[in-house]
Image (cartoon, rainbow, N blue to C red):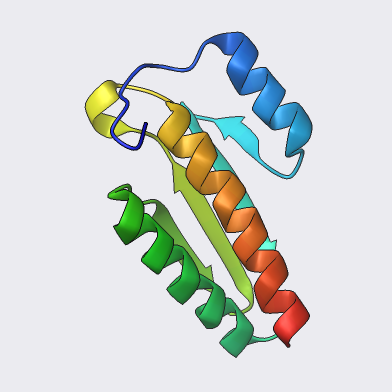
Length: 103
């Protein structure tokens, strides 16, 4: 499933957004801004996301602004959102919770 390029059905996207209300569908991407308890916690989170992204061979756009980290996901070569996007987004939520608990 890691290389699946099948576009998400609208119902699947809506289901993901319902289960993960901090993620927003904007401009054909899903996007979320996390606020870390410190700058270094935000960087630790980015490192964990980078490792997960590399393992999945699926890389988000990452914007770091002090304690705020914004991730934006879309499967460019599929021309829209796929399972790869929602899977990495859910993984990022789990990783952020781990970083916050560790701080």
